[in-house]
Image 1: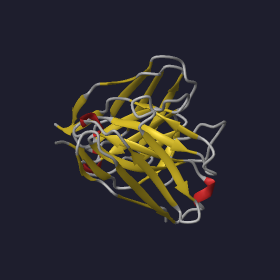
Image 2: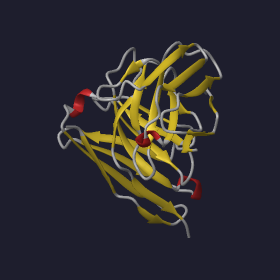
Image 3: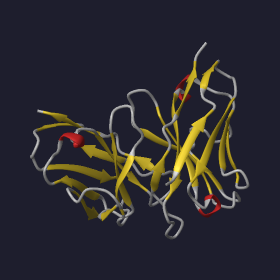
Image 4: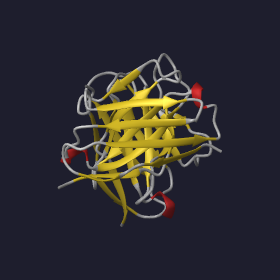
Length: 107
Length: 122
């Protein structure tokens, strides 16, 4: 199984900050990576697929990059709605696996 | 607009069984892989099972293989998960998720339901 490790686990930031979350895979997986946002009490919402493709309807504040084993999600200017937990997920090989999540908190 | 509505969750004793359903609308249901993803309280997301659009191919996480069965009825636009021999560690919110356009058999989850809670406890 491919293990996904996110860092940091928790991130404290202010509105307007640029935020970067890292996701590392235990083996190379090209760009078969997705990012999701989950607000408290809500279902996950797809932000990015294929490592860097922005899902339709998602703000351009969000961007993704990376290939192989290291990936990043960047929020260019944090907005109040962005305080949530973010998960990466590999879909290179079964079983599909998720990172443990990164909680973005208000500083 | 794609809508996925799960139902069937509840409280069940260890060793018991429960069946979940996911009613889909706003999509050509038989064209997409459908999946179940769960989330234990305060924990990360865990993929459980997926089924191809035709229903002919199914995939399971090792943690549920042999106990859970995924199926679909394309005439009713409904996805199912039959869960047997339930354990305390199966306690979670179970989400139904639609697969995005597959590329070489690979897909992300582009729409999610709101989830149905399964609690396994005596």
